[in-house]
Amino acid sequence: MKNIKVLIALFFFGLLLNPTSATAQISGAKRGGNLIKFDKAKFETEVKKSFDGNAKGYQVILLKNGQIVSEMAGGKARNQSDGLAEMTVNTPANIGSTAKFFGGTALLHEFQQKPSPIGGGMESWLSQQIYKYFPLVWQKNMHASIKQITFRDLLQHKSGFIQSDKDAKVYFDYLAKGVSSDKTQDFYYGKSKYANANITSVGYLLAIIDDPSYLKKLNQLIAEKNVKPDDVWIQTYLGNIFESYMKGKIFNATKPQIHPSCDAENEYPAKNIIYAKTYLAANDVFKGTEYSKADNFTKACHAAGGWYISARELAAYVANFAATETIVSNETRKKMFDDDAPQNRLVWSFTANDSSLAKNFKWNSTPYMGGDHGGSHGTIMMLPDDYYAVGIVNSDISPANKVGQNGGSAMLTRNIMEAFKAGVANNF
Image 1 (cartoon, rainbow, N blue to C red):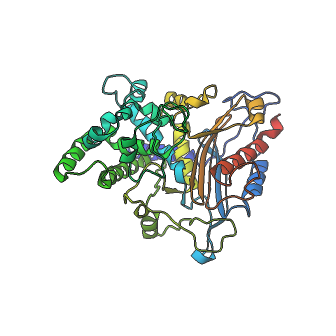
Image 2 (cartoon, helix red, strand yellow):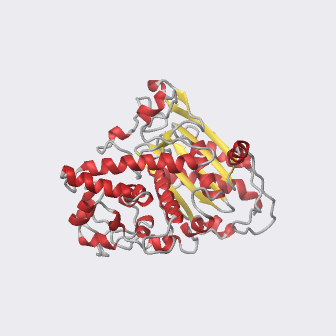
Image 3 (cartoon, helix red, strand yellow):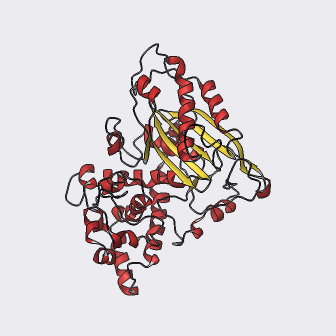
């Protein structure tokens, strides 16, 4: 049995090490047809052109069917002021909101494992109202409009929370304000509008969905301590069990196992791991910044961001997501994005449109999970013909207007998309 387990582990590790190839096709391309010939040299030339000297440091990995097609890194993880270190594909870096992909897909993973309280599978879970899984003190004091929010609303970013991220001092502020039905507002219930509150909510509910005894214990502690609904202690409790859940049941389940950290400042030095600092620009000579859970007023991890991971490990997560059923099933993965109805996507935060991909692949929208935390940026993107890409930079990208983007994750995503287009251009 031990030898079998070793062979299985080696097989999945091979997903991230073995090169992949594709058959050439003279004209036309079928989405998901695996028939496109890829020019790795052209792809890598474009990646270098986009990021060498334009970002402090970068990591880019392209996958097909769970196998690495190309992996590149360049620039600095740390400048001279911080001890100088080269950026590699194994350097942990802050990926900001790209980490929302972990929590979102973990929730879908949970929904696959057990029937909903009213019976039924995934669709029944997605239609469940989220408030039922809140601590009683939140349920009793929240605005009545919160009751309409479902798990589908959270994963589609359609919850309509009124309170903005800047105004919300604690999570309960979102619940106290409720949701808007005013369609003249920027946020309203049913409108797809990206906001941290959605996946933050997922993070606080994940472990409770997995093990309802957590909620029972939390309610008891709140009653014993006479904790008020806006006390940050509740978030700290939920954040700590979220971290334990992700590390114990999600990251440890991938092959190979991965070890993201939301406490880089303390965890990595103990393991002699050099992680990337964050800088304002490619030529920044001042000391960089870093983020750990101690910087969060809850002093706990959360699902909205703040996690450090290397491109190699991020690619491992994506390979397990895209090419196996370790995280989600094939059926669930298809539910997450339909190119004919991109507004109904689950988990994916944004889409990018491109006329040549639409023409050549009938691929109208590229879904991606972008992340921005100061000068740290990350992306996970799904591309035509079963390709996925991950990218990380530890500064803004210049020139900021190169492709009409803002120098952050949107531009990171666009630059990788342009490199991909160069890699497949000879097919058309």
